[in-house]
Length: 244
Length: 51
Image 1 (cartoon, chains in turn red, blue):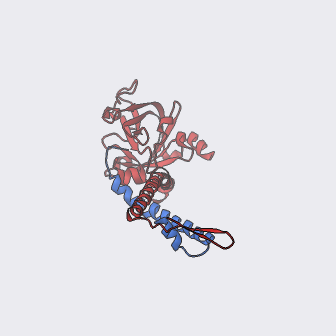
Image 2 (spheres, rainbow over the protein chains, first blue to last red):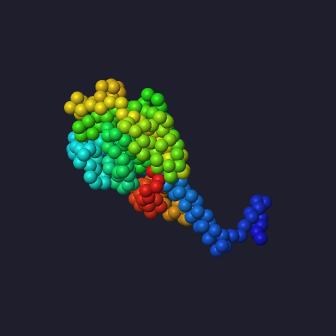
Image 3 (cartoon, each protein chain N blue to C red):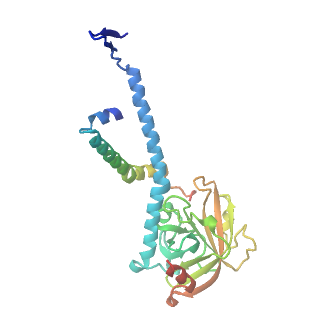
């Protein structure tokens, strides 16, 4: 109820009663604000995982890879013995002219995939050996080293720099398989058209679809050429990197 | 909750706005550099099956 007061000049003042919020209304207001806050925090966390952390870690891995040999040097391929031994640096021009990552032994998240970038399946051969040199990296999150693996196409090359040798692999094909199809990293890869014993393969593996991860995306390469590191960086890679 | 915080901020409207933005920035930085990295490990423990 409101009271109406009329002044001498005819002005009417309406006095409205002060309505105090009931306790229930107050609690629902607090609850509503808390829920809204939780929603905003969740969205921020998604942004953190997909953009902030991904880019931050990706840049760290790239910088680490570019400056690694000057400080530490690679473990020789025949001396790799334990988890996280760093034995190679990988260049994939298709992923970007400045894209480079280190390759370490093992496929554990920490410290190999999350911090270093690329991991080598321990039960597969080393680059250049007869068989299948199989590696894995994140597709998204923690730098997403193999984010653009689905963009690899005919004519693409991958360059692997080790302590003594440069290996150049040429692209063969890409396939999406189930996580149980472990034969894709066999010495003679299953599902690879025309695969044959005695060849020297490189298999890149990652998760797909991005953020869903119910399948695996596989890209196969075959050794095209190798040369001593004493000869310096392969000429075509030098041209690509020189154009930056 | 937020209206209470707003009322507690001292100064003019402009000063309140500046303070609110600064406080939001600090909260965001704390979340991105401390809370989320911790939360990430809690929510996504290391597994060998998803890369």
